[in-house]
Amino acid sequence: MKRWMKMLLVLVGLVVLGLASIPLFVNANTFRPTIEAQVTRALGRSVTLGDLRLSIFSASLIAKDLSVADDPDFSAAPFLTAKEIRIGVFLRPLIFSRKVDIRSFQITSPQITLIRAMNGTWNFSSIGRLLAGGTVADGASKASATDFPVLDVRRLVIEDGRVVVASTPAHDQPRVYENVDLSARDLSFDAQFPFDLSADLPGGGTVHMSGHVGALNRVDAATTPADVQVSVKRLDPVAAGFLVPDAGLSFLADIEMRSACDGHTLTTNGTMHIRNLRLRKGGAVAPGPLDFSYSGTHLLKENSGHIADATTRVGGAVIHMSGTYQPVAIATDERELNFKLAGQGLPINELQHFLTVAGVRLPNGAVLKDGTLGLDLAIVGSAKSLVISGPIALDNTRLVGFDIGSKIHGIAALSGLKTGDTTAIEKLRANLRITNTGVVVDQIDAVIPAVGELRGNGTVSSGNKLDFNLVAKINSAHGIGKAGVGLLIKLNAPGDTSKNMSGVPLHVIGTPEDPYITADVGSIIQKKKNSVAALFGKKK
Image (tube, rainbow, N blue to C red; front, side):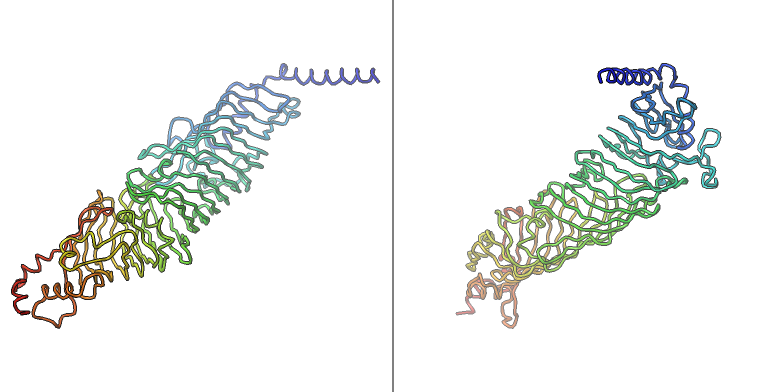
């Protein structure tokens, strides 16, 4: 037994020694021109390899450097560079027949530069086009399928890559994706193949994509059909360069979506979980998350799209958003939006985070309780200068934690106005226009039983300064004593007891957190022919 074991060990040692000695007799660099020519013809790009060495045990040729040229219409710098590439080969034909049969590529720490042109094409659009005389053929689409070289690879792996996404001419800072890992099996330009991709997003967060892609569109590789499942975690669209910082709109998003591309149109649907939502620069951050489901389409060439319906549920009610987006300018990621946001019967108690995000600031920490909100808003413009406008409606709600009567000066002492720290709002109708410069509110029509009916308009500046002019019709006000109501009615319309209402001008200044309301009773008196003294004289 010992004798046989010794013979086996000797045999194994001879085999190992023989395999280890093969690279001494095989000059790996003799295969470099063949590999460069084969891959160059398949990609339609000049490919350059560094010195090769043969690794018998991994069955691969290893090059310390790799460079793939860019489309000359985009850049003279390489499209891809890498520190190392392992080219898996079949050893028997390589050693005995000097034939290179490639079975896999493993690329370590590459840098890939993606560039989008003004007309919407990418620098990788020409990958796979037929080479003619060392350059990309102008009429690639005219060549027959048999003219194209075939590259069938069992496996492609990219590890620890870095992808830079830029535009030409440059409008914004390039976006950089780190730790890019890609794995593809049964890679073929002429058939569909599966892939798996992961990367770190600019500004934090991650993206993972898996699915199938192909067959390659030989005219424009960027329009190759695909069916992909995408998972995005902690996307910061401002840090990622999709939204400009000055716009004020910001959030973190987790996205799960399914996307299918036919080469021209990308159809997508999925869900979004949004945190830290802020709609206005300097505005408050939503204290709670929002969950959306959506569906839409995106046109690849035009870089524009349509959101058919994005919905989020608030209690038993639903908020709908739909609309279109398109580039503000060619070769830029900034979008021109044209959206509608609508919802009816939205429960106030479950809307507190929406109100905070929308910039609704209530005085002295007060809150709205009960009742419903309706809205029908248009969201138009670029992210830098969004305009949000449209009607809102509040019904049967209460302002809790704020004594409005204590803030009205000039009328409380005269009429005995008392509201307490809870103010009922029977209805409120208004038109809003929200921009970076502030908020304009007009066509205000409110019924506040303690004060009466209010109509008017006003503004909230970008510095949160109030300037509202209202008229209070106080004939039915519950918070004003009968004597005060009668007095104000007579002051406003003496001698005409047939009038149902009287108007008291109110001017609101200060801030949303601390408003200062002045009842301009003096102007009523000055405008009337009869003075207060004459009024009391008639009573006598």
